[in-house]
Length: 232
Image (cartoon, rainbow, N blue to C red; front, side):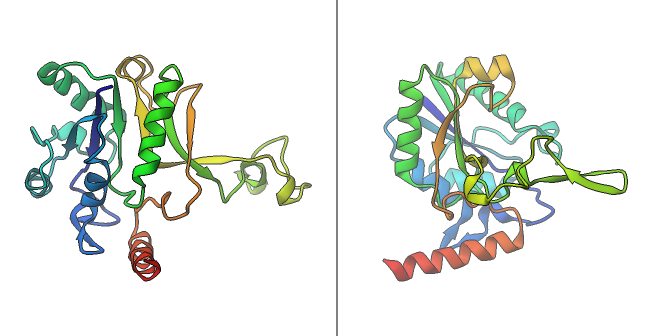
């Protein structure tokens, strides 16, 4: 199986400037993702899509493929991750041949494990190639969610669970952003990483599902790194 690992790493970030190459635990944040996927036998290439020359130079020096800088229209705050992925996938297959799947790995999820990647690839291999997405148990159950209706706050769902104990609520999960694996055909057809039928890659460890988006998230990641060192 040939899988292209794509790491999207836009330079601009209003909430956490420079986050992708900011040092975490002695190495740049993006290196956590590069290192964890580098030795996978199914990965034919690791491609970084970025608009930032500094990120591009850093990743080339790290030994991964950065063939171009991302076009301006794909480097805005509103740029769609699917369009970014299709841009990279189309170029790669034209230059290097077809792949069986695209693995999207956000650099803001530094604590994903090699074992999780291995399990996710195996799920894809044995499930008729439905999309595989990383999910975690949600801490805010949808049956206990609210929405605003004029000046009122009302249950988000008509069939809500406010009369139920937390332990009686059905299991609910949230996409954690750490793992998206999809076939090129599916991505081109649906223009989405999440379809009507998806295979869940269950991730229960809180640190593995961390998605760094704010300064608080980064401080939490630094705390996790120090905690992991102490536990070794």
